[in-house]
Length: 317
Image (cartoon, rainbow, N blue to C red; front, side, top):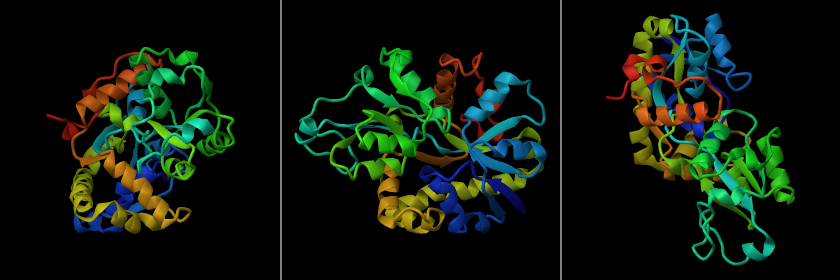
């Protein structure tokens, strides 16, 4: 069996997909994977519609959004096999020089216990930059803000620049807080006056990354997809046995622009956050959190149903 699998975009938190491929776990299950690049986040959706690929990975957000816009057909998108079950984004703050000298952060970038704990309401009045490259991080952060009693519309928000640009602006003192994922977190923490003030993974399950195909594709490629799921489910016990440093070594060829030490720091942080479940079933709790964030932000117009967006084989009991 050969399946054409498209990545969403190259991101550190997608390491389990690359590791499963590099370790030969797909091949051990009898499936040959042709791993294809994606021109941009979400571009694989169009390739699925054209029949150019069999499956991609990405956010269930795209499945939920399609179901909100169009009636379900055999060609509709469907999600299966959960890999990233928590939000991989962080808020970083550039601390004033006097404050930064009061204490140092630990390896994870957490606030020193001597310092006042940061709350999301403290974003009010600060210059905050949200992620522009993909929609999910800001939609989820908006819900976190609402849960904390903060109106997201009241933030002094920069919304149209890249994470790289925002990091550079933070280090120049032009921004106070930025929303980023790895490797920008580890790169920023090399500076003594930058701290992690909020880890989105701490909210708990949020359906973040799954495989995505179509209902017709699920039937046509049932055996191949079952083999893919079995391979992905081998990753978590492999990681438990070998650790994030070995994971970094295995996937390093997929991240040629990152040093091995930096990549190890990134993956160690994600491993500590228990980001990856790598399981057949998609969490109902995580799906509900994502769908709720989308609805309350106005990104969709009606509540999303788990059974309309998730393959039967991926139902959580």
